[in-house]
Image 1 (tube, rainbow, N blue to C red):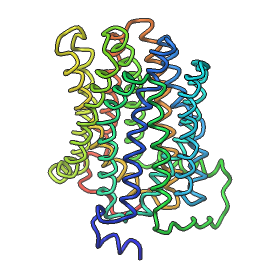
Image 2 (image 1 turned 90 degrees about the vertical axis):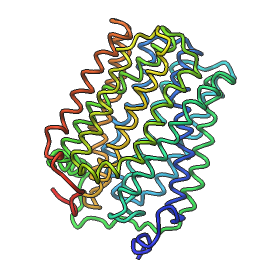
Image 3 (image 1 turned 60 degrees about the horizontal axis):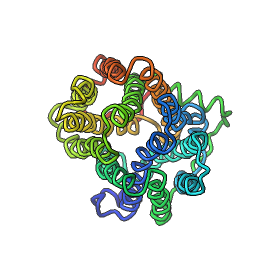
Image 4 (image 1 turned 180 degrees about the horizontal axis):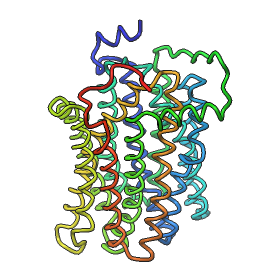
Length: 420
């Protein structure tokens, strides 16, 4: 059996897990470049207004509202690895179109809206298929280990990505820096294609469900389950607040504080340093406090630390280090929480429902991202950058409350199996 083989090997010695891990490491570094280079292309190259920057960020997240639920149904009916490969195949040329249009002198803000939305659609497909694919590659008793190592991948990418992006932007310009992301998707396609573990096509259900019924199944499972319900509401509130924070901070740093692209990249990279520390500490904290109390502590860390950004005057000499500390603490708490929440979701969901659960969960939680981005851009244009940043602090505090008052805080370990 495939899973028996996994139990005898460390995941670091499993060649297929390493292919998945390596491909993600490269792709995530490229994605981090885009996360900084795309809005900076709008700000520095096209002189976009705060509202346009907010709309651009919203366009990249809007697909999580528009297509996630339909993708979840699709993911539960087909093999997941081909979807991962196809998603990267589509994202590479879309990202490469930005520098091409810039070189030709044809780039406009409307092009960035369309490209951001299209890349977002393919990202939805990749993300829903990715989290649903993991349990077919890693057994249940190794899910936390696998998720922790994949979260470490993201942390390493975030650590180097913004710094690399900032330097590339200063040396080449923001549009040209996006070529790094396009190449990373090609590399990821190669590693995913090399995985040899057989993934069987899902068995069709005994009673064929319509798309609408299938979507309802996924959403209902998330809403009915008391653990998932608390986690998804926390995630939605946190994402709304973080999208607003991220949109406003880029404008605040570039326009008001006059930070260079390299400085902005280094400040954001601090979040990845914290994230890497979080992946290393997540298991130890859970062993010491138990799953539920550890999760509340982790969320407290990531939801309280953003208050340092508006509270500290941007004109002070230590502004950049303090902002970096805020992002670092936020990254540490968020990553530790993600390791445990993703493992909890995978452990309590029946295999045939994973795609629809992940889609329903992401629909609720990620739909808040474009709303937060638009709110951030709109409010900052009306009341200023620091005032808007202070408003985001209240949102982060509300996010913490959802889990702090839920039954999750009483969990010591992951539940033994799927549950309602």
